[in-house]
Image (cartoon, rainbow, N blue to C red; front, side, top):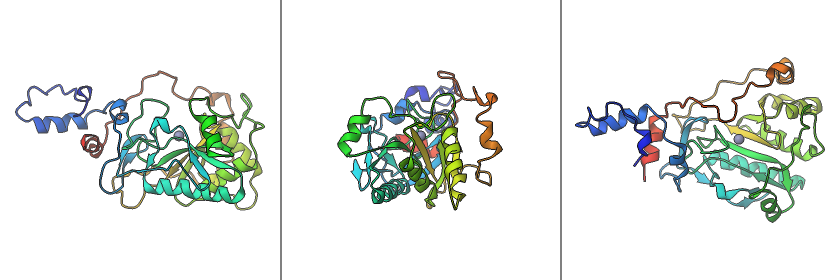
Length: 289
Ligand SMILES: [Zn+2]
């Protein structure tokens, strides 16, 4: 059953003779609590399908990322956010294999989505429809070291210095390689990184620089980067995002992030957010046993 707070139907009693219709109306007009999504332990059955957007969606028939694989290790597993569309799991595995060939260490994989996606009670507004994954810039020598570094501990070091956003001592070739490898993967739609990191790679990248276009500056994202893949085939209810503007994004657009007016453009912590109307297909997924 859905949580009662998700059924604030003002005409509920008047429609008592039509309960099914009422439920449908109510669900389509409100978002279920994040805790309802977080309480679900397993993916839904059936084929894999992405529904809605990363900030208002869900994923059916999600796969679970293994604890580790060639070149990668999944960390903070207790959060139970290691589920995604199979295309996303493939992307992680591709990234791990490519990093392994360079012997940079294991790529530490953070949150993907909850078993059926949906809103999370903490940390993310997106990551809802099985297309998003956080990748830590810090690499780990072993899976055990990765868990010691990450589980129940603060985040690993930032790649930028506070204030100036110049590269920190932690930034280097393995980090740039990881970012470039992810951005060059054709499945990847865009990657969110700190403006300081985008500026660093804009200054450093040689040769074919087309991959820079996919790097989208955003606050935070200085110890990890956030990869979003494209809507997969066979997901007609997946809503693609607006296309990224043409060009490398190393010019005026990037310069704006370092101007005083860029400060304070994000939502303050605790500030209320208007809840979008959740896709009806996600409501069905939430109710499915
Ligand atoms: Zn993220």
